[in-house]
Image (cartoon, rainbow, N blue to C red; front, side, top):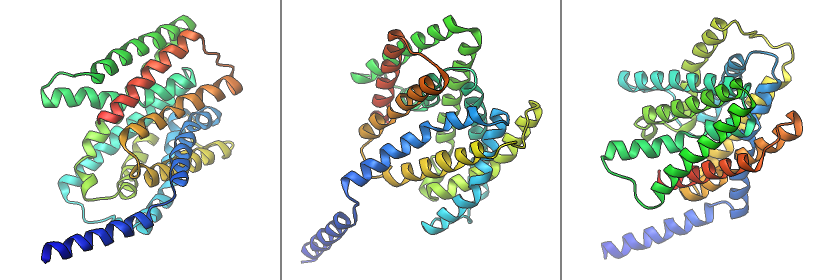
Length: 303
């Protein structure tokens, strides 16, 4: 009888969960909208009259009060971290700040499609790390993802070198950002079980802002904006809308769908890169982007 009652309770809770689940079209719109909003970030970075690292500082600093409110609204606690957890969060925040600084610098040097693809390369890095940590070899689609990632990156960077040395350097900065983002995710994976996404983002922003400001000052960048529109657009569109929609929608989709939706980012960035900045993609560029994009989708599905 107890098992029967438990089964009935599970059926009731499952039915309630199904009723509470938002409509499929709304979830898909949120997932795609989040990716599109994140893809628009590089546009605002380029338009800002501050330095690129300073734009990253304003992106986190201006969003911080809103992130704290979102954490409280979603019932996520902001206090109660132990010393070890706080130390890991601080380390993760420094890594994230370096990731953002490296990516924003790369955005100013390379094509926007490349910057967006390579900036998201953390998923592929995590795939590699998984093999190393488990001491096992890839199999099946994983081998294909690795080959595609390496070949696609080689094609894109070779094309960048044809344009200029600076464009290749921009690619390398964005690749470094993808690597740093993977380290950031690995550093905070333990804290995610006890604290929510918004709560962790609040702490990461709190620790990361001084790091970004210090790097901007050391590089001699202009920090105070002459025009506030780009930096306000950056924090609203990328940090609040983009992150907010992704946090809202990710839990409802399997990793493969998330990986495929991720491919809208380089597509959108390449489109307005061509429209606004005259960045023309050749057939070779597109083939390289498709290969890296396929590797990203597989790596997210295998994560």
